[in-house]
Length: 457
Image: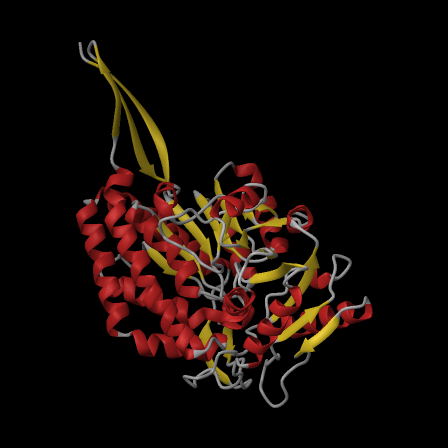
């Protein structure tokens, strides 16, 4: 049997060796899940909810050790690992509160002996190929509503968050979810490919555009539910009437939180020329106050880059920007003596000829560009193949609404950033993907409507 080796990105040390799946074991797990799903679908919703309530209680009880596991395998600062788990509780509560109304059969016509109803039936067996940067959030955005809606789940966590994936699965089994119904598959891309080869009823993926395109091609002729969350190059515009210091402090956090490894991290900033210099000064001062170091230290803000090849991407973006006229204000290089460490990096005098302003960075690096006004800002914000999130900072709500209405993005922010709510759908435009999770629509997405025509005779 093959093994999947797990390394701590903060120090390079091997921390685990886990048995990996292969094509045969994936096929076997699929057959078991398919067989188990009908009984789960007919299990009363109250019992399915009770399992998820017990899962929530277990997350609370084991929060610190679960956070430690996540930090060791992803390099996420320990305070942010705890934040993720605490934030998950609100998402669980949302699903539990809203699932009954979301799945309720609707009677849309009842007259003259004819009744018309819409029933939401589970998809069946759902494949979830998940991400490492927020493994609890991203995984549970799919797993929990899918289970509540009556589906079986075949879950492949990222190989960079494999232990966390096993922990999620263990807690669900301990909470009463049948083992055959909820399976965790260990491995890298070949295991994901083996999962896609099964006759699943839906595929839910979070990751890169390149992998998302391959998944779409692999399942495109099967006409099954497909959801792809593929990241972004998320812009923010700071208007001339914004407070430069307040905006800078907020956006520095939005750009650098989780070491910049968030799909909705702020990745491009446009600042009105009237306040550009004041904003940049405040932004750099804030970033210089972020402590980089041991992810297990409570005062660490910048942790490790989870995937070592991403360090090369960040270096290339810095070199490219400098060669094309950018000014490096802080950072710009790997951190010596610290695993996959990269210094928080800020560049000004940037433009759209630079990869930094066009290609996803997924690290603690940001470009700040001066703009002459609203029209130029909107044109630059939309000059991208992505469309996940975008934001505007201004005290004027009407101005913000008018500007954000023109931006091609699935989520928009006024005077805030890098924020996800379980009450709102998470979706994107362009190469940021297709489909959605979260909100009541993110519960219904794990179902298919069945139209009932009922005539009394």
